[in-house]
Length: 143
Image (tube, rainbow, N blue to C red):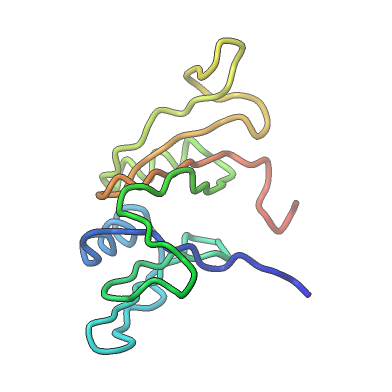
C-alpha cells in the first residue's frame, strides 16, 4: 500500500487574503473553494507541478485526536524547483518578499548558489508561515 502525502493544512487568519497570496503571488492553482457545511469553508491550492496541495480551513473544528496550529507557526514547508534563480525572479515579479538565493558553506549560510541540492531561498505568507524553496537537479519525475 502506498502512503502519499497529498494535503498539508496551512493555518491562516484571513482565508481570502491567504487565497489571494497563494494564487496570485505564489502562483498556486486553486483546486477547491467550498463551503462544506454552514460556516465551514475549505480552500485547497496546489503548487505548479506538485502532487501535494495545501488546504486552508475556516470554521472547521480540529479533527478528533489532533491539535489546532496557530496562524504563522508553520515553518519549513519545502518546495523544489529546477531553476532557483528563475523561480526567485517569478516570485519577486509577483510581489513576494523573497530572500536572496543562499547555500550552506563552510561558515554557515552564504549568499549565492551552491552545488547540487545546495541552493535555497525563503518566503513567508501574510500570516508569517514560512516556506523554503530548494533547487533540485531535475524534475521529480526524472529522479
